[in-house]
Amino acid sequence: ILIEHSEKEDDFNPVEHFDTYKLGEQFAGLVNKSIQEKIEGFNDIAIEHLAEFSSDVVGRMQKNTSNLLNAFRDNQAVLERLLNDCKGESDLLLRRLDELLIKNNELQEKASQILLTLAWQDILIEKRWQEVKNKLYLVRDMVQNSVEAEVLDYIKEVVEREIPGISYNVRQAEGTIFYKGLLDAELIYQIYVGRKLTDIIEDGVHVLMQFVRPIEMLVHHNVRLNEQGVQMRKGMRKVAKLGEFDDTFVKVEKLLKDVRPHISPYLEGIFPQEFYAFLNSPYIKKKPENTAMAAWSIFLSLTEKAEKDELYILVGLLLVVNKLRNKYIHPLKNTLIDVENDADIEVMRDCAYYIANLITHNELKGITSLSYKYK
Image (cartoon, rainbow, N blue to C red; front, side, top):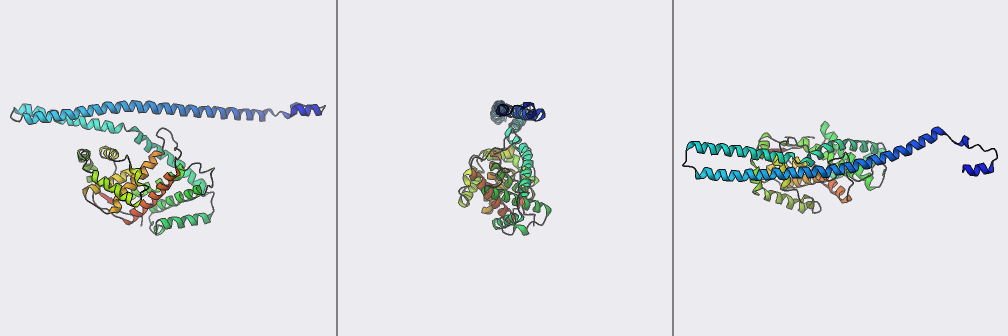
């Protein structure tokens, strides 16, 4: 362009068309963008290598610890047989065998705790979830600032249809926050489905996760595992591995399939491994911090005595919510993973409303109590 101007104008001065400050800013912008892209690429590669290295190291540690645990179990069988065969021997020998048996049991317990500690991915996911929630609040605020009051009124009507009477059953402060969380989730869902505000809601994962927040709040305030239940877990470990509670979980699967056949497949791969982890975990609190902890706490009561079908369905739904939540949280990055299929969003929404309805209309007493406290 400058050459064309110089050919047309005899007194053309190209210097006048050069703003060194502006050119410098443009150049700096290009360089910064390039550097930022390189840094992001480097971070992604580093995290990928770290994830592979961590899983390899932890996998080997888990394998070695598992081998040790099996060896201690073999030792226990040998010591118990010796103890039985040596009943007529000296008291000193019997006392010595008893001491070895006690020591071996202690080592078994320590090996089990180490295996639990090595479940690093679950621990990291919980940490990342706390960080991710701050981003969800930011998305929520931006969406609310971009919609009219009429839209919010419509959202209230939708939530009221899904959970009849909910607006009148949230008298306490915690209940108001829970109700507001449901409204936020439904608002973001409706905008996503309508393909609006795509510059704010870039991916469906933000929609899915918005439904997790109020449900976790709901179970935290309304489900409680008593001290007896906390202690009882320890004695259930061996019994659980013998398949004593398999029938109870089969009932959970069957009843959920009866009412939500499209959701029941999400239970695949959860039991018994995650139940074993719950029984072995030293970090279980009386008030559950996620839906899986709430589900297994209620499950404990169901193994004690049969309860209403709705409570078995509740256990299944809570486990599905936690599984979907964990599926889309990257354990090593403070980011969410893009949703693979929008069907997951629909399942999460369905679970959230079903859980809210079940908790507001059911009670449970025993080692685990369930009582709606927001009214």
